[in-house]
Image (cartoon, rainbow, N blue to C red; front, side, top):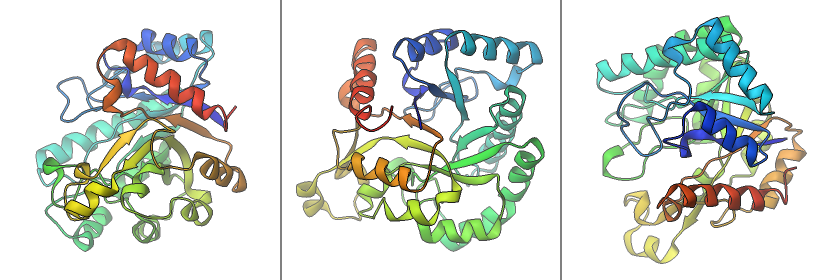
Length: 304
């Protein structure tokens, strides 16, 4: 396995500064944020270390040469939008940009895109599955044509009032994965597996690794701390951030030894990237860098 970083935490760093930081810290790879240029709609979104809208052969060659000089691989190009947004204008804009990210990933020879399925939060699971059946086959066809794997993160995108009631990503649980993989049976359609999202849903985050081992294309390392006292006060129907908080690896409730052990059991040898989303480390650039150093130091117990 190769240990890397999700670049979205390095908001304000340009491409070269981001790669320099990743290299200086000794990471083998980086998942590069590729949002459209403009204002972010949420935390950790809107970061664009590679502008895919202007990807030429010359620009691709420059990016690859710079990464080679710094001994850093690009694990994936990352764009996590809502491609099934109830707002049709936003939906089409998100799909169009996702296809540009797919094209850029192919041009760079990365051949991996990390993203969300999306979800119309006002519709039921069943209605969203039908929406998926309509929207996603052409997206996967675009990826297949370019031999780019699409790795869907299992984040419900349900944290507070802004995502209420249904969240903004359908690809959340094994029962839904089976249905969606049944609709699109493609070797280019799989998972970006993050154990932390199972913690606050109070689910087993180890068992699905074995069933879906052939669908795990990319892996995240992020932790979640579940506050039982708060949960007992507000219940599971409350906004999730009322009873949980994203944390650095080792600061939450994921058992990282068990998790990495399971990855070795299934023979996973791909990219594994630290995703930092801990508010306790957002006060300054130096605090952000400290959070990355701490996360890497902790995970190097398990991943070399």
